[in-house]
Image (cartoon, rainbow, N blue to C red; front, side, top):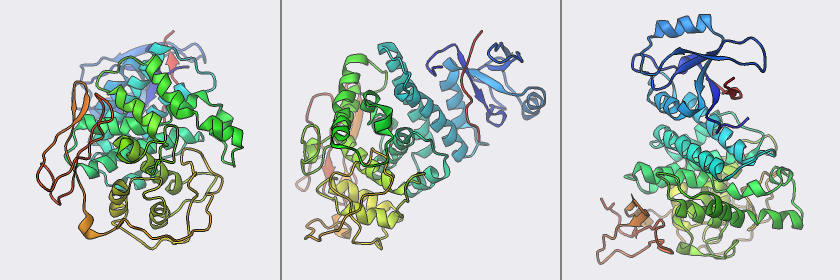
Length: 430
C-alpha cells in the first residue's frame, strides 16, 4: 500500500505523543480484531491537550495508536519540538518516513503518475525539513556517529540516499554557517533525490554488490539523464523547492571535477555546487558506513583514500571542508589505499575495489592552514538561489551561474566570512 494515499494510517509510539500542549493531529485506534478488516476510531482530537497520565492510560488500554497519513507532517513537526524525545529516536522516525517515500519510488510494483510523484517529492521535502531541524548543528563527525547508530535497510539506495542527504546538510552548513533553512533543505533534498533516475533501472542491478558487466554499467550510467527527464516531465511544481537545482544535481552528481565523468563531461565550477557536495558525501558514505556485505574504512583511511581523487573526481575546496572537519583532521590512513577513477559510490560493493597507488605530485595543499576558504552568500528567493556579490580587490567570482534561476555560489578568497519506533505498514480506512 502507498504512503501517499491520504486515507491510510500509520502507527506511532506512545512515547512520541505530544503532551502538555495542543495536539496538531488526531489520535486513532484500530477497533477491529480481524486482520484485513480494520476499523479506525478517533479517540482524541487535534487541538486538545494530553498529560503524561493520559498517555499511560492509553498505553494500558490500547495496543497501538495511529495517525492519519494526511497529518503526518504535523506529527513530525510536533515530534521535533518534543524535548523528551532524544535526537536518535527522532532521526529514526524521520528516516523511516523517508524510506517509505523512497520505497514508493523504487519498489518493483510501483505505479507512479505525475500527481503521485509530486506527492512523494513533497513528502520527501517535509521529511528533509524536519531532518534539518535535528541535524543542522551536527558536525560531520556527529552525522557519521548518528548514521552508525541508526538501523539500516537491505535496499542500499534507501539508506545511502538518506545518509547523503544528512551529510549534504552538514557539509553545506560547515561551508556556510549562516545558511538559511531553505538552503539547507535544498542541499538535503539534492542528496535524497540524487539517484531518482534509478527507478528506471531493474532492482537486481541496483542492488548487485558484485562487479557489473559492461552492459549493466551502461544501464547504470543512464540514471542521471533518466532522473532529470522524469522530474522535467512529471513534476511541475513543489512549493518551497527549486526544481531547477534538483534537476541539475540529479543530472550532474556523476560528473568529475576534471571533466572525465558522465553524462555531460562537465568540469570544475560548471558542475553545480550541490552536485559537487553530493559527489563528496556520496563517496564518503559509501566507504565509511557499515554494510552487510563489505568492511568499512575508518575516518582517517577514508580521507586518505578520497585524497587520491582530489582534483580528478572531487572538488578540492569542498574536500578540504570535509577533511578538516572529519575527526578534526586525522591523517594516519594507509597512503597505498586507492580506489579506481571509475569507482561508483552509488552502487553497493561486496568488497571495495582497491588498486595499487602510483604516487604523483600533488599541487593542491590539502591541509595547509593558510588555504582557508570562506563561502559567500547563497540566498533563496522566489526563483531559486542567487549569489550575493560582495567584492573587494582580493575577492574573486566563484558563482555557479550556468543557467538562469539556479543556485549560484560566490567563494571569497579572504580569511574572513562575509557576513525506537518503527512505523508498521499503513492501514486503510474501511
